[in-house]
Length: 201
Image (cartoon, rainbow, N blue to C red; front, side):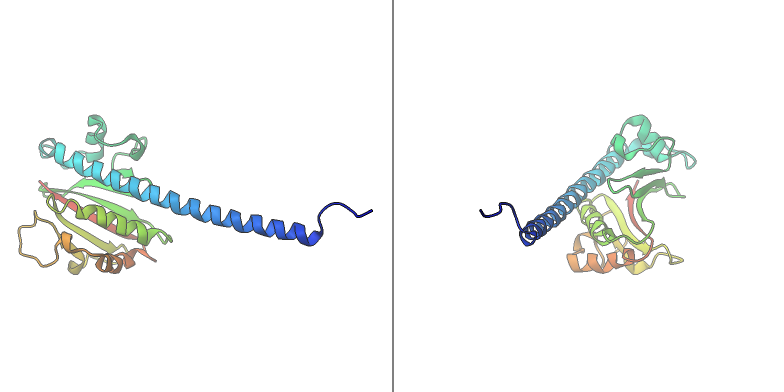
């Protein structure tokens, strides 16, 4: 009478197939989650910009010593998930990247900057997503800049200007294409870096 059941080779084959399917499922899930977070980040940038535009007149009366985040907290101008308890100078995007909101020393502009604190395999993709989101606000922004935090100063060639820039410049935000964004975002591949957006009053 023949024995019933599976041989060891068959069982190993089944386990190998399950392993391949599991890896594929995890890869698909990771890609879907990254896409979701990138879309959420774009939405958060939109909410920051809309808050700056809507409360421009209120912001113009803000004293240099007063916190922009504290004011927006009082006005319920930002999504609760971007705010952390007892934090009055930074908000946090969906990737938990610190985002500084502040007024310029002269009081003529506000800026917000995404602070990448170190190497991350997703930095390049996130950086491009931020720059792409800023392109949609070229009419409201004075400039967008990116620099490595290991540098002593922001290189002028890494500034791209919006419609609010008063000077005649060749590097306009709307001219940022994929290749230019990839070149700019190389600064964030292996170093801490900052991506700035300056909003003129």
